[in-house]
Length: 121
Image 1 (cartoon, rainbow, N blue to C red):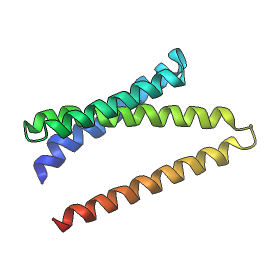
Image 2 (image 1 turned 30 degrees about the horizontal axis):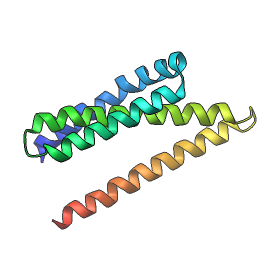
Image 3 (image 1 turned 30 degrees about the vertical axis):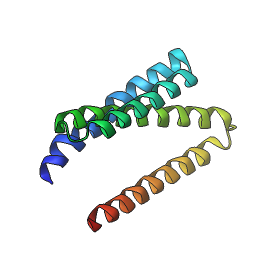
Image 4 (image 1 turned 180 degrees about the vertical axis):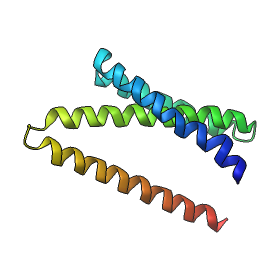
């Protein structure tokens, strides 16, 4: 279990920082649609690669998990940009805090559900 946390999850989580910064830069330069498509492709290709080669190597899983987390970071950057630009000045603070709250709540709920399902095995 410690190997999974140190070798697989930690690099993927740290990649969120890099991909978040790079995603914000790309949204400003190339636009939201480009970054959203790039993030979605990154997630899809990584999940397909993991699905077909899951027993091949732990390092392949680690490498693909980095791109899954990066793709999620790209899509969250795009969602934040779209929400903040579509709200009026009076609604931006409450709208962004509601977006962050629902994102945090859904991420925590998803982790709890998956953790519960994994503990059943």
